[in-house]
Image (cartoon, rainbow, N blue to C red; front, side, top):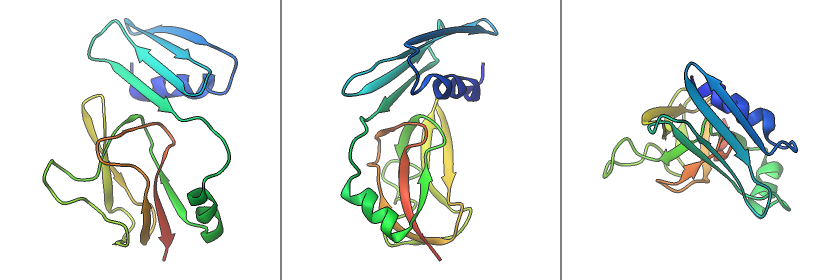
Length: 153
């Protein structure tokens, strides 16, 4: 069962009234539970101990000052393409890939997201200036979470 299939399940039930879905494919059984409350947490686990993904979703509400500033300035947003752990540097003790104020080129690595013990390099899809880094090193990120604001150049 591939990671894309798991994310597709999450996407399909998110925002619906479905509370739980159980799927078995290729001998792997996955259960997705959606909780409603101040925070939503999706737990996906299988009968294989090495496959466990947790997605943390913060509650929605009024836009923050940062969101309003982003919309006014029309910044480009780099979002997480998967659930995992955000890392700013290639290894502990190494300098970060980018800092706020840095000029980046299309295809330049901005961070790493570790998912299922795989290190995924996240690259810039435009040329621009890093205006804001929205996630702290070592923090969990969810699918679609905003990671960087980039001012296009």
